[in-house]
Image 1 (cartoon, helix red, strand yellow):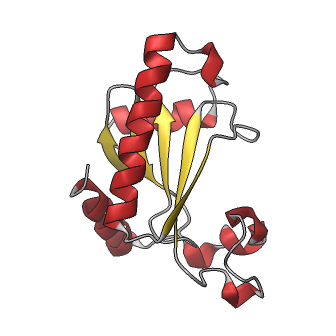
Image 2: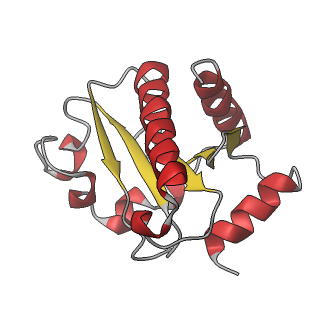
Image 3: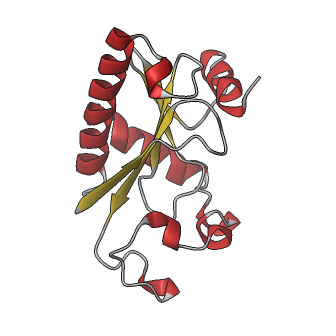
Length: 148
């Protein structure tokens, strides 16, 4: 079973503290690391590796719901810009990365803040210092729920 399918199973079992909300085509979760405050994922319910593997009606609804999640993330975390990606190179299960961006959000690493999120070195972006503690995670989940 893929990592995302495992996470979905933990959501269904009520054991995933990052879970925000279930939608028709997927699950909204707060990202494990919060270098970009409010980083969120939208996980497809269906295990497919590519959008074009979805039935057309499901794909269109998945895209629509991603847009609604993106808007909620933007409002909840007061983003100036949203970065949205569907990659799947590491976890081959359709899922969206939604990054709320702020001016200067990468300046601590010698970057001008105008580039893609992946310019932040992975060892920094995914370091333990950016794992939210229980209180921070609860606040992030609740803040996003208010807009979904």
